[in-house]
Length: 362
Image (cartoon, rainbow, N blue to C red; front, side):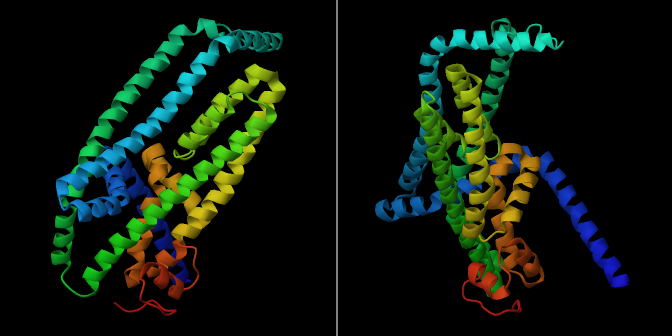
């Protein structure tokens, strides 16, 4: 009875520690979140920066070209979203009257059932819309300030990465400790690059299937909505929801409730299959993480850091698993989080040369 009680107490203490740790991370998000994003991007950019450095032999040149590549990708990401809304704005006037007419029908239906709808018509909501725009501008200002901070952190990390590597070698000494530190960094970096690659494939798959469905049912500007789905699918959870709203509204304006319902059901089915079945399985298989743990980590890090936390959930979890796998006392926890059932598989995935069913002694 006592051993069982001890296990229950240990489990409760672990849950309490997890909740307290998450609360602490939420309080420190303005410091830790930009740093985590910068480290994640540096791990992705490091192979490119090293390749350029081997050719040019000048660190400032390799870092400058690497940052230029990052800015080009970021500009393309933002430009794609801007282009979608810019093209859609040209089509808006021809659908505006339809929107007002359909809204009048909805308003009449609600009033027949005694539901108050005062000041709900689109043309009567100018002040409310302007308030949303003001809030959006404030959010954009905050995001830009955070982005500038992250860019400076990336430059500093790239400049000092080799120096910090030597510091860690010296601090770790020799033997297993030094090997563990280097293995952790290399395996975590490779896993993060795999994560981004899988995310890109899943975003493209969502865009192709969603755009094809919209084309089949005859929704206008389906190619714009496909591009929007691809770009916003990089934002976990909320991205797919936001990307589905414009094409559903377009379908409603173009063909009424039947076409809007068809668009909504098709996009919802696509997102459910890809987001809740294919993507977790592919991410889990490539990152060696249990699909159930993938979903749980999305919920946890989404609670801690919001949308950014959900995006960083898998890289952070992979880093935790790599660290746990490199030390004997915590290796059972790494086995539970991974999608493996044997220590030799865990050792092969995260420790390379080591093997054996039992965790080796350090």
